Image 1 (cartoon, rainbow, N blue to C red):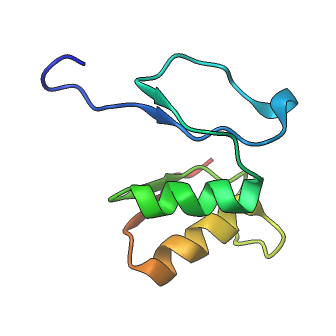
Image 2: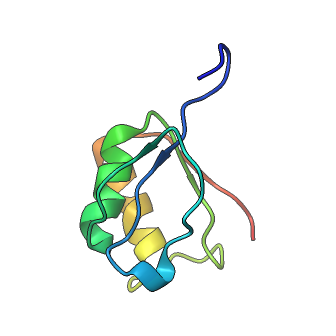
Image 3: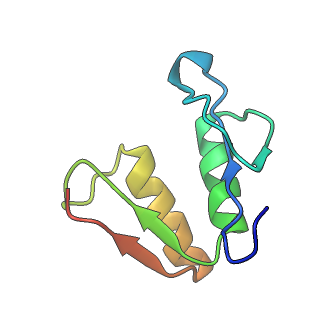
Length: 81
């Protein structure tokens, strides 16, 4: 990894059809969505979320991840779609 460059870590979902298969410095084992999303929050210092809309939804994995991050005290940036 080059100096001054952020390390990229992939947290793939357990569904192979939804994986991006991109290059990264580290690829972690695939996990079910809820476990994976919590692992992402637990590993980051700030969460950048890109939901499909700005209105929070109860049955949305992205919004559930945002709620978990806020509960854990992780700063969250929600980008306007």
